[in-house]
Length: 255
Image (cartoon, helix red, strand yellow):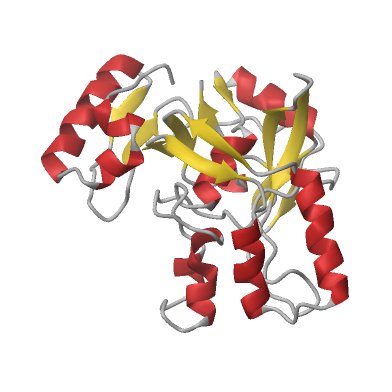
């Protein structure tokens, strides 16, 4: 979003900020972004700044940046094995996921604006859905190319792999995504609470398009959906596995 400041550049600084500081940061952000964006009402319950994208009517949040370890780590595997029957089959599946993701590495994520929810059929009034798109659970799913084109037509973009994983990991605070295991252990009231991030994003359990650059500089398409409950899978939300279905849901980011 080509905007930074002490509050949004560092998630720890943001988390330590008060309501007046967040309101001031949101005012400056909207001033920088221009008339297409209007401010919401910041709260201390979410570690982000709420905005509305006027041309589409979609609600966005400005997510603070920071550093985290991207990819499937040994700590992730140890945490997952605590909740799963860690058979040889599951161990092999976890190893395949780890190879798919590449080696764990420290990544710096810049502040970014991301839609609270995935594109759905209720957005048809303000957004022209690509021809051939499918509907699942009222969500719009497309192939990768139409998703990129749609975002570009709206002067938006798709999230990067690092941005999605940053959200899945709640800004690097969660080894396993979004407190799902706390829900299993009974310390969260509902499954919906577990699937809502500290940034106020919904539907992070759905496979969705993202883009990322490999070591060779080639942009690849990927989709993200955490692995959920099963004794026959790697139990728990192992983040960022490349998504190979022919279509996936769409979440927009600001350029």
